[in-house]
Length: 201
Image (cartoon, rainbow, N blue to C red):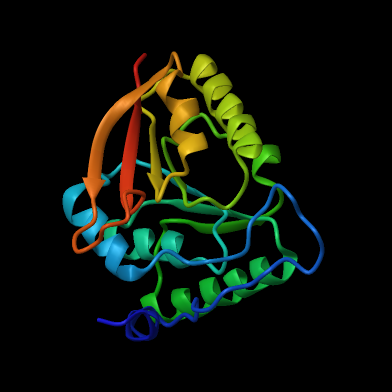
């Protein structure tokens, strides 16, 4: 199924790219994860009831809405571009109309990833190179601080991880590699998903 057809199925519109209107050296353009990648990932890695999913750099809301639709768990998206966040809110409204009533939350926040306050029950975090490694490290500090306050099983899901990201993770004292999912039919070594798991639970 094409991305456009999958969007249509969910009642949303998340295609295209969106550059920043002004220079943002630490934040990258909006570029959605393809549904093909999401399908491949979540056929091999399952989310369960009780998980709470956070997408950093959530753009127009594709990943968060897909996860909500597939697993029926609470999702949060964090997006720094105000106009893109507004589109995510519109997509949320259209999706909720299509999906019908549900008590499971779909929420989008406008703000910088490093300013987001990690909730003590959030435990699954998704990243697709929305920002520099400097911002990633700040987010990681926030997640680590949250773990110290509320010990739990936390997973970091990194799609198409930059070498700078993997270098940070390779030396991190609280996370270890849990799973590597290589995407098929590609010679690009970055075309993979790395899942890290907290070591103190």
